Length: 110
Image (cartoon, rainbow, N blue to C red; front, side):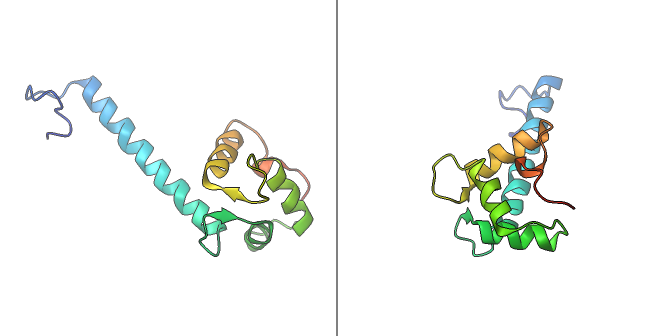
């Protein structure tokens, strides 16, 4: 109850309840995103390499080459290390949600 009744007035207003639901929803989405990232980062080093991306996409039935994966990574790799870190992955997913093609590339066929 303390979590919902932050001002301790023994009432839970619609505003408080909505804020509580939004915060739990964001936590759930962050957890799901982290789990998706872990799926791609096969060695769990906090980075997605082109070979890891290639492996996962092909397992998902999306046929592409390792070079295609290098190109996809270059499109989101803001720090220039040749890999996708979690922050870059978040940006990639957010952009994809805005209507961009998955992984910003149309170089492979499903």
